[in-house]
Amino acid sequence: MRKALADRLGDRITFETLEWSGANTHRARREAAQKLRAQLKDSIADHPLARHFLVAHSHGGNVALYAMADATLRQHVDGIACLNSPFLCALKRNTKQFMLEIFAWMAAYFVLLFMAYAVFHVLAPLSTDPDLQHLGLLAQIGIGLGFAAALILLIFLVIVPGLMYGRTLEERVASWASARRAAISQDMILPPNPDVPVLCAWTAGDEVISSFGLLDALANLPYLALSFVGLLVSFVVSYGLQAFGVFPSLFTVPLVDPTLTPFVRLLVRFVLDYPISTGIYMLALLVGLFSAAVLVNLMFRVLPMGIGFDKLVDSLFVRLSVTVTPVTSNHVEFLDIESEHGFLGHSKAYSDAAVLAELARWISARSTRPE
Image (tube, rainbow, N blue to C red; front, top):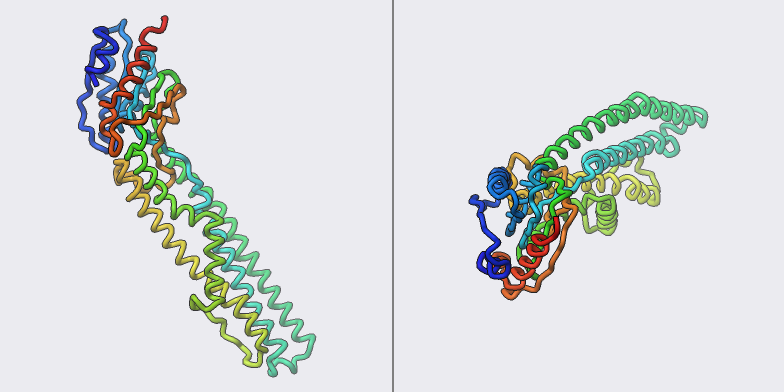
């Protein structure tokens, strides 16, 4: 690459290299960025009239942009060229939906089922149990009204305070999740770069960005299943499979009166048995999906991106991904280049003739611009 650029740009160009481990860890990239800032300051002090360009390959592009956190340094860097660089990105997740709303709806669902179950066991015998028939209509109505009053009292003494406490808990959890999300975002997201132009050159068919795309798709599957539509489909399918006898019903309401008609028995099965059993299936599904979300986030995001295990919990509150251009840079030029190397050409970008020609053109255009 040095020879190709020197041939195209002439003897007016000199090269300096940054010696760093190249390890695919977030810590290594941060340490390299700090080292690059120091080296750039020395180079700018030694060559104050020169134009300074950074050329980075692969995740070295993140190192170069992490170094641009220094606003003063940005004023002296004329451009950053990134070759096949997957840029780290951390987008916000709807933690309220995943941590609070799902469990709130499940709690409300089971409360309604409990009330329906209680109503059935108290009111149904009033019209069918011979031992209660002698009480007369007024006595039966009184028992029904008393039970209704008991339910209303339960709502005001238990459910309403529970909702109020749930609201307070929601605010606390949301505040905690927001703090965890801010912590990892501040550490992971590339710093704002409003000044330095960035060239993003990608060779067609690069295997790294394709691999990250596959990993991202796999990591999103549990979150897709945890969406409102995904949970609704799971509920309907679970209920339907029980109704058709594919899944066993996990709960059967004990019939207090054996004289209930077949229609009432069937109604109880569809209104109480299957919904309660479906709720149990959904609780097991939620536990499985949340466990899967943690596991796939570790396997397909945290480890491939070189993020430490200390960031595992924080990483659940953002969607970690990679992009072909840095989302925090204002001046970006993107080049999609057909590589001469073909398959597995990620590590050959800096020797690709088409890439080097575009790189020389880009540097030359910014080296000759008027002051």
